[in-house]
Length: 173
Image (cartoon, rainbow, N blue to C red; front, side, top):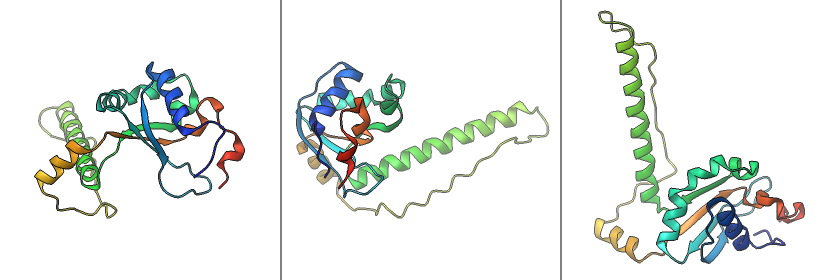
């Protein structure tokens, strides 16, 4: 875990205040995974209330319009999902993309004119994901774990570059 002159907690608070105008109550903040050269470890942030976490997750897309180029390009906010929840969300995204492609293909077919039904653009999406194993957790267990868990928040990638608040030497192991 890299050490810094400014704590990760204060960087997250500064980011939230600057980008969203709120200062959430951070209960816990730690880096995920092992430190690797050239890669930034994502942060797992646990907030005091679920409402704060929901607000940040719902407004995370606003970071793409940030005035700070490092925030705009490298900072992401995502919910902390279990493997089963992540797999379900991934499958939903794939299905949504497939539907969008089929709608576009249908529009392109209609746009070419009545009789020949020529399709201008078709796309095939092949999904291979061996990283997320299927889990067999009962619905009741999933609901119970959802209700009792504090809402964590994952802030990914380049939070160190936010506001140039962490020195270059802090990236060393």
